[in-house]
Length: 86
Image (cartoon, rainbow, N blue to C red; front, side, top):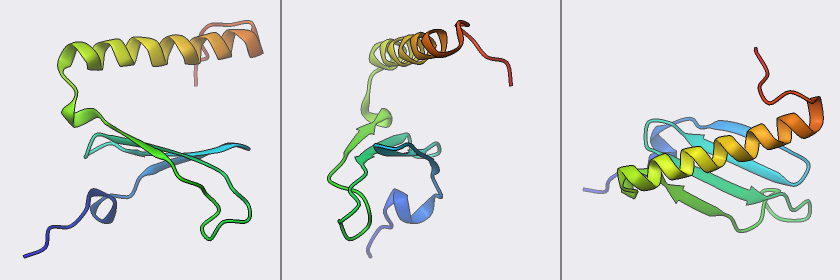
């Protein structure tokens, strides 16, 4: 019996920028990042997947801190505020 892949079971949250496509699979703990490549078959190049399920708790906390810090840094650079309320 063949098991289904996580990307066949779950619809990801997708964020598209000018340079990248990010797909976040919340239930399965996966983050995929692909470069946008206009002349490729699917419009994206070879990417990478971060498998959050396989990370230990200390590494997850550190990753969260680093990602939050990187996002907050960009928010501050662009808006003058470190956080934006939605």
